Length: 283
Length: 255
Image (cartoon, rainbow over all chains, first blue to last red):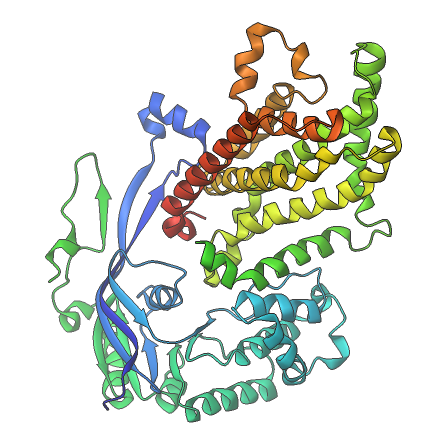
């Protein structure tokens, strides 16, 4: 229980700006100056509100919550493709961004060329890719198609190749967003074995899924996010029933009773004057 | 930013290699196609300006080549950098890597094209000139300064086009105007005094004039010319870098 934190999320707020009637050309900017009706309407949207979370080294943490609760935003902050509006995130070690398998494949290139491109995108040096290449191809079971342009692959083949590259990254921290739903039955089993092997090697895993049975089976701890806030953190047997109760309450329209008071409104219209910032109330 | 770029050099190399492969795959003549457009321009301008407008300048096509290749490097880098972040939006949203890698690899791709074009045109230059002017030894110096200048322009244009999508069209129009404000098809000495200020305000005038000095006239440009190029390069890189860093954190949200 005293192992150091691999991921530390401290008081993180993430604000997106919703831009209605978006002005995105110089021409529109000029027209908006002449005609107020063409002006862009902006709204704040707090995707995450005061989220604090610690994932210890070697721990597998499941992230659950309804759609739009901020799970993917949190993963993207950890993978550093987004920056927090407030607060801090510290990650020790190399993060594998398994946010979406097969990102960055170039359809015109062959499987082999894509392995090299994808590997270097994920931060692997070229020599390292050369060393891992045979094992990546074998894992993807694509030996006979590796010289074919990826545009001629089936979607299952693409997903297998993407997972194979990501699985060979040897990261310290694995971030998985529903990443295990690729390929056929046999390949899925292989992926889950791979994940179990990662766990056995003491890697830190952060796992987002709506499959509560998989979460219960794979995770040491579970964090429940609702409307951008951490509602509960604990063992799967503590947190999963709370989520189920919340879902049931939401169906009856009485979720508020369980959630308690909100930290602040999630959306606010931005008019001319500056609005109070809900994050200003954060400690 | 520079150390980050160095750490990700394999990624830069992969991105440039990818662009080269995608561009030239399936065409037997490969990169020779990319020479077609400068070649066509050289023929057209030679006919129009040497034989119709009768510009009095010896070995006109040599004069043209020495200015038009570096111009094409600049113009193609500027145009393609405006699209670079948008075409790579899915990558930028999903994977972290230093964002400047995208415009940097765009410039590097155009740089490779320039070097290939130089390799093809050099024998032609030698054939016309008959000898290598030793001033050509300064070519890498001028080229380095120009690359720095172009990187700055590409950094700025790439992020600004994300905010203002029509910047791409403005860039194309601007480049057409800038082309005629650069002494490429006529020597600077032919430009009337009333227009000289406009030419002097155009950074590409400094670079193209220097290329013409070392490759066409066979002279060493004055120290002032190098100072001017270095100043343009430093200003461009500083401004481009600042603009890029200012927009980079929210880049993904704007894409």
